[in-house]
Length: 307
Ligand code: UDP
Ligand code: MG
Image (tube, rainbow, N blue to C red; front, top):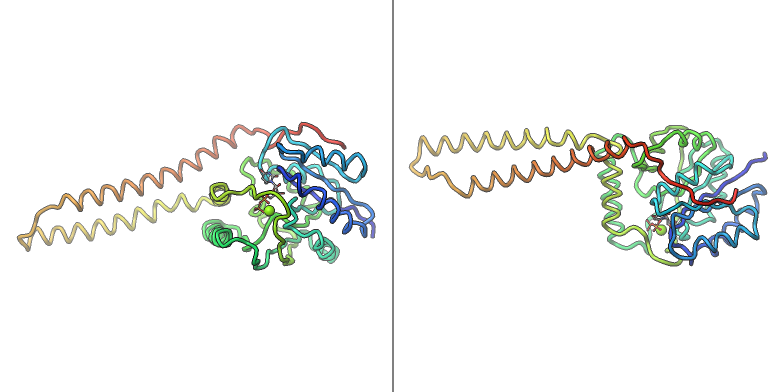
């Protein structure tokens, strides 16, 4: 069976990783005569693009896209998927955390007929405690609050069949969350687990705040359940307030201790005020998203490419 394989690699300031990754990838890809390595430079400020271009000048299988500025991991990935030409397309990070050595296993599954082959990150010693906790919390929340199921530890390291890539091309969301979108798409999906390696060089681009934003984006892109939260919370609080009212009435009618407390009034006003602010915030997030999506801006802009 003759087929072409594309590897899509989003890179943002990865100058120390590109050459080692290239070497490992070419080593693995040797067994697949027709392949392309598609690097997407996501507005790097370091020498990443120069390094990719020099690779491309000696190896015609190296393709690259350079975005006009940093558009973020998900959009860089989408740009790569939109431009990849392979019958199957594998996306992986540039930092060697996604071992190229797993690629043959992904391709085997694809040959068995699976159209999406996800990878699941195994327990990893090198992963920091905070990353483990935040990542666990993230998957828990996303699954609780949204209608698609995302398996814990699924990263953007996966193989997609041409059909799936073409389906993804139709999506033009500004708040792109591929981990949620891909299970939503359907098709025959399976997964392979792997032990992630440590980041080879450089630092992670996901700070705590960025991860939090990613999580909030993920949840609010896939679900409007948080909007219903206010109804639930409101009913609970109204119920409590009713019981408290009965108690106050009882104190008023049957005891002498009816001194309406400043403390309890303040506390309840603050409490309800706080809940209202939270709910306003949630509504605000959705409204903000509507505002941005409504502009229908392109999700990325390409400044140069070599194919
Ligand atoms: N990345 C990107 N644009 C960004 C941030 C990250 O293209 O704005 C790339 C980055 O170069 C890497 C991948 O996305 O190839 C994953 O990023 P990182 O390794 O920093 O995330 P982590 O593995 O720590 O979650
Ligand atoms: Mg990484």
